Amino acid sequence: MNPMLRIILGSTASGKERLALAVAERMGGEIVSVDSMKVYRGLDIATAKAGPDERARVGHHCLDLVEPNQTFSAADFVRAAEAAIQDIVSRGKLPFLSGGTAFYYKALLEGLFEGPGADADLRARFEARAAEEGSEALHRELSERDPGAAAKIHPSDLRRLVRALEVSYLTGESISRHQTQWTAFHADDPAERAAAFFARPRYPFVMVRIVRGRPDLHRRIRDRIDRMAAAGVEREARMVFEQRETISRTPLQAVGYKEFFPYFRGGETWEQALEKLAFATNRLVRKQDTWFRKFPAREVALAADSGMEEVADDLARTVFA
RNA sequence: GCUGGGGUAGCUCAGUUGGUAGAGCACGGCCCUGAAAAGGCCGGUGUCGGCAGUUCAUCUCUGCCCCCCAGCA
Image (cartoon, rainbow, N blue to C red; front, side, top):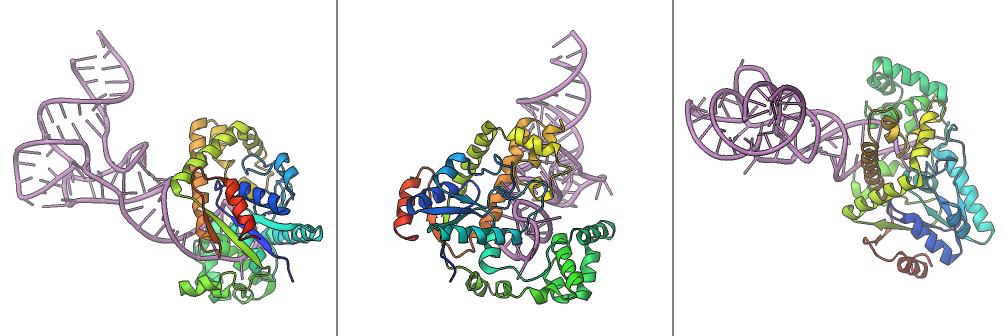
């Protein structure tokens, strides 16, 4: 029997990390970060990674797993997270999960299909072809090899077209044959889909989601950016900018770096860069919310100045007890 | 004060010879099975600076006024 997971969801800037820290501290827990960007060493400020103080208070896992020039996948995350969970439990502690990467939660709780991982050369070939002939060409080929997948993937969605073709070439089977775990999730009826979501999770879990109003969130995003600026994001972003040729593409896409590139090139002002960062952060929050709204979580409404400590007390005594 | 350019979506702007508007970004919704802070799909946004006039009809033409920018005084 897999151990029970206590999960605190929330978008970027929602305050989920602080809440998770407060609850874990009360209950003798440790935190497994569910975040695709915090796994990279040296990317600390823009990712709002837990610092030495937080880590001293509560044990943290799945941070700083790889160098920025290494690749990292959802499957890598699942392996690392499962090892961390076992480690925590073996020491008699409670595993808490917190972070903003919805896909990683799904991979851990519902599983990924058994299949081949990424093949860089193959992907490069498909991408080159898409650049030449357009992504529609890949879609046409997929229609022949795997009509089921082609029906679900939009002709413009290069990422998924490449993955589907990759699996087809590597296994000789269609990706739609492999992807059986989430089939109910693709049902046309919304109610059926909602019910299917995490219907048979790989771990038992209790999930709580922080909910805030948009105006509150917008204000918190501004504060977050101010804090990052004061903490020296400029230096960190400049480092990423200077190493952009060697850094792998995932961290290069993180919110908080690419927004500064035009500024470093001299084409924009610092203020314009911060403005862009605010936009990008808001877009991220919206995308996260779209996922999280569908997760089977108990909602916890937080107002602008509501006491995090009381909420932590309450959660420790009730839902997470 | 004069001359020229300009005032159209939250922002930057486009708008063919008059038929009451459109693109990017922003904003909002959705999709998502090994790159996911990524990638894709969909959707509005509006006293077209104001007031008169010409016209069947004006963002588009005319007049006056207001505001912004540049140059000259």
